Image 1 (spheres, rainbow, N blue to C red):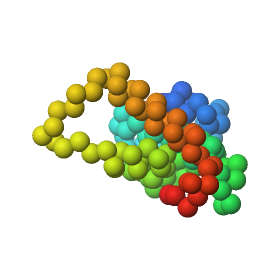
Image 2 (tube, rainbow, N blue to C red):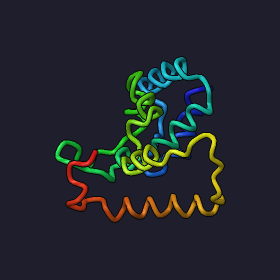
Image 3 (cartoon, helix red, strand yellow):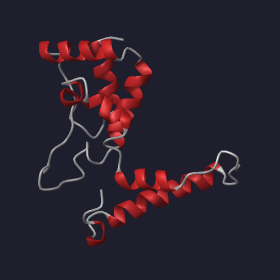
Image 4 (cartoon, rainbow, N blue to C red):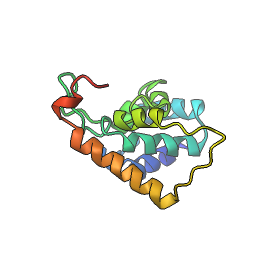
Length: 142
C-alpha cells in the first residue's frame, strides 16, 4: 500500500468530493502515517465507500454549524481519528442507522425475502429519508 494508491482509491470512490490531484509533502506525510495504522487496501476501500455514502461528508446535510462544508482527502487523513470515525459509522446517514437498529432479525429466523425484495426495501428507505429531510417532523432527530 502506498500514498498514490490511497489517492487513486479516494478519487475513484469518493466521486462527490473534491479530487486530490497532487501528492504534496504534507499530504504524503499524513497518508504515510495513516497507512502505518491501516495497511490493508480493503480497509481503505471500505472506509472511502462509507465516506462516499455519507450525506454529511458529501455536504448534503447542513446546519447552523456546518454550512457548505464538504469532506476531502486531507480531512480524512489529517489525524488518527477521522478515518476511524468513518469506519465506526459516526457519519452514516442517520435514518438508515436508526432503521438498521430497529430491524433486527433474530439469528434463528431465516428471512424469506429475496435479494430483489431487499434492494427494493433499501430504495424505499432511501426515498423516505429524502422525503423527510428538512421536514418539520425531523427537527431535533439525530
